[in-house]
Image 1 (cartoon, rainbow, N blue to C red):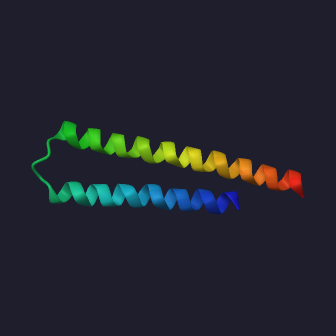
Image 2 (cartoon, one colour; image 1 turned 60 degrees about the vertical axis):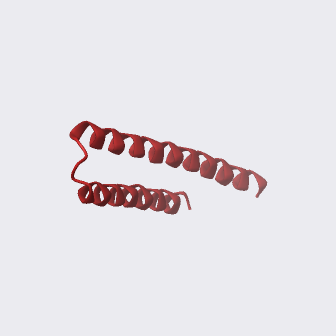
Length: 68
């Protein structure tokens, strides 16, 4: 189950990056520093949420094993 959660999180992370890169290609007037700040900001936010989801998922799996 945890492997499935990790695969979904990876798909979400790469999907967000794909949409962000396609958005930035449509707007060529963005300079390099702004592009980098958008990439890093979005990636850090997505990775933060991914970490929280994995942590909560691991806690739920541990709790389910204890209850059984």
